[in-house]
Image (cartoon, rainbow, N blue to C red; front, side):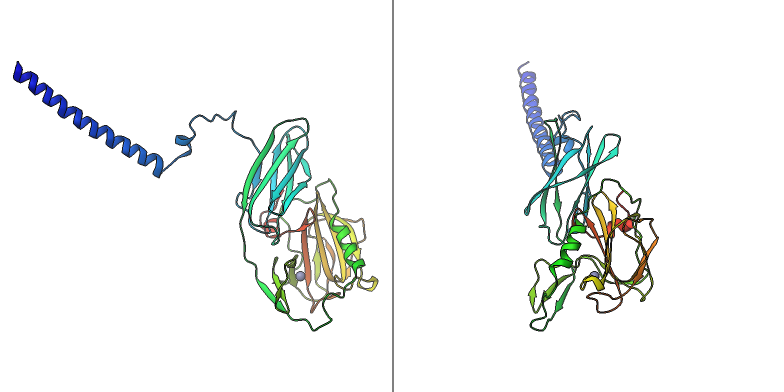
Length: 315
Ligand SMILES: [Zn+2]
């Protein structure tokens, strides 16, 4: 009996020791699994969909300078949408998409500070504030070095720029565009969006190329990249010395196109034009060093990169 008891004890102890090692190893492995490969399910097991913060959808999820952010907010009525960056807070209009969804566009440009963009939406009478933060990625743009002789830098009229600035504030509620934007001229692109400049060796903090240049043939067709209404027009002979013959096209909901240096204008103020419709011809009026079309796309008063609007569209 004594021997058997002893043996039992010994085997128990052996077993316990083995068991301790086994459980310690298992714990270590589980710890490694948790810390080396954390998964949302392991770290947040209790969050049910009903308590999860909604519903605000921001695309693209990793925007970069020049992108237009699309913010979709669910709710029965128009939300107030605001975005806070290092440059401050701004409010953006939201429009009804139907099915209790609203959409606001938030423009970014080469001058927007990269980093966190905090987007908030609140519906009148609803306490809850929907919040989403995205990180705006930096982006390097090509640079140009411009050398100006003394006395030839900035002799432009305020009147001309005041006219164009007033056009850029146009906001009309009806969405007139559909699908992706077309290229407005067949010419080769000779200057892309966002190019930065040095003037006489000094970096111009406020300058970036606010559009895309198409070096088509003099007199070639300029077509509307998307449907819209002609709401602005100016002629070189009337004082548009920099822009030249110029058209402003309102696509609705704060989305605008501007066309510079035109030879002829083939539309009237107030005309509703369709995508692909000829609105004029390419020229070199105003401050242009050769025949080209400068097309600028503006969203809520800021000039955005048209690439996404052209390639995939923002409907
Ligand atoms: Zn240009």
